[in-house]
Amino acid sequence: MPHDVNLVATIAVGFVLASIFGYLADRLRLPALVGYLVAGIFIGPFTPGFVADADMAGQLAEIGIVLLMFGVGLHFSASDLLAVRGVVVAGALGQILLATLLGFGLCWLWGWNAGHGIVFGLCISVASTVVLLKALEERNLLQSTQGRVAVGWLIVEDLAMVLALVLLPVFAESMGGHAEAGSETSSAPITLTILLTLTKVAGFALIAALIGPRIVPWILIKVARTGSRELFTLSVLALALGIAFGSAAAFGVSFALGAFFAGVIMGESQLSHRAAANSLPLQDAFSVLFFVSIGMLFEPAILVEKPLEVLAVVAVIALGKPIGAFLLILALRYPVRLALGIAAGIAQIGEFSFILAGLGAAYGLVTKEGQSLILAAALLAITINPLAFATAEALERWISGRFPRWSANFGRRRERVLAVELDRIQAQAKKRDHEQARKITEFIETFPLFKAINVDDQEELLLLFVPKAASPGDRIVRIREKGDAMYFVVSGTVEVDVNGAAVQLGAGSFFGEMALLTGDPRTADVTAVDYCNFLVLSRRDFRLFMSRHPAVRAAVQAMAEERLAMNRAAVNSSEYHDERLDQGAAATDR
Ligand code: CMP
Image (tube, rainbow, N blue to C red; front, side, top):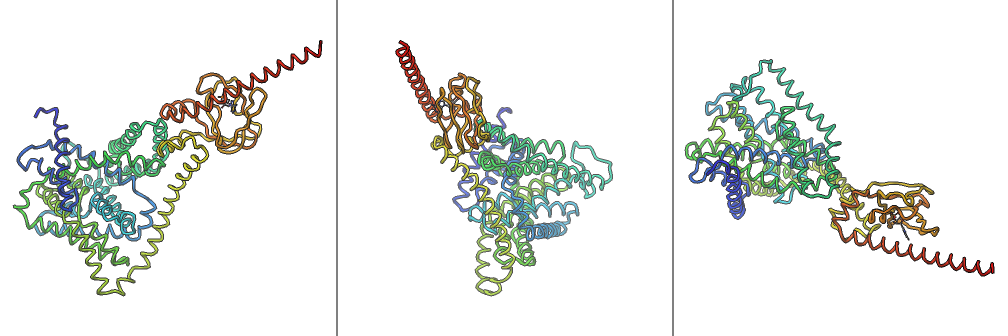
């Protein structure tokens, strides 16, 4: 294959096989993810047939990670995390510690050195957010207390892993690894390096928190106002990848963390749901490539050569981790049902394990064999994850049958407090959404002119408007001046002075359209009669919007013509009247 089509070939074969195997996995009632990993194995170097470019696939995977973490950030809710902190912080950190110890123990049994053991343990301690989100979604649990605790749990794990990613290069040498090929080794003392690294991360977080919420929504609104969907999607992606890349370059934090923050910042914007909807297809596509590229690294031979090792790692992931989490949650005095649900959700490993293993390999802290073990175990654990959920349900039934009183009462109080708090947050979020919906409904009720355009366009129109208020007697539009805007009367009354005759316009009407349509000067004076509120559409936005909505333009045009005709008729009749008066005066003179 000629070298210059490598990228296309990798993407094309990756997509084709991933969709075939994804479909088959779904038919077998397995997560589609398993299919993507299998597709990767097929185009990997360890199986016969087409071999995709591993470097290229790795880079595509990197984009997948950035978009995935961006998605996680977009849906991240700080208030949710705060509400569930009582269980997730101690729980997730405790579980990471436990799982790392278990992994470390395994490595110790195999005679690996301590550094390798720690990194390996860390790799298998963290569950995949993507797998969990998919599992919760399938079971309709995303918005439940269990789902939100699980998501909070994984966010704590992800953040802990980000810290591990940042610190690994610093500790690599003291853990028995080496500096990354091509990078210079720092001679600074380790505490100084750690301090420097943490300061960089904190600096980045601070800048992201202070400047991000001002700049990002501003850019999004500016772009949304152009009305170009394509430009909007592009800007969302540019911000996600730009912040990820920029932060990695400037602060040395990982792509993943940068993307996560980009998502969090964007999530605060009123356009976040559109950002999410627009970036989702690309996010899906590249996350598929991420899993395909992981599959490519998998050496099936490991299953034959080291079956017991693979099984041992799977046992730690699918049994050790969930049992540990279950006991931890009970120790924190939360109910059995919640403990079982979380335990099932985290009985797998995924993206962060692969990222950390990759980084570990670059620093000589994860061997090829270690990487293969992690991949094989991940593949198996993700495949049997639905079984973990089924087991959790069966166990719950068994416990509540066997110990009905205990299981009904244990941890109930805490769960209730948690549920109330989560409900409150959800109600608040709903209220915000309702508020926006109410604003749009009210707007449409006042201006039925815009009824026919779709909700997205209505929302966009609201972004185009600039509110303006006027007091009685204020002159809003002056006759013979150049027209620069059109006005929609939200409340109050204005008076249009047409050749000495006054026409009053109230809420729901508009004025100033004639000069914009014709390019001629204003045809009348318009003055506020009482306190008024307007929505003002600038000439530029008027043109843009009307060119996209010909029906609205036609309606505005019709109104302008009607007004013009009315004014002409008034002029004619007043001229006729004046003439009659003049004639009358002449007759009296005679
Ligand atoms: P424009 O000419 O841009 O500025 C003055 C505005 O007054 C004009 O657009 C119309 O919107 C409005 N106007 C002019 N004539 C009438 C009329 N007969 N009835 C209501 N509004 C009018």
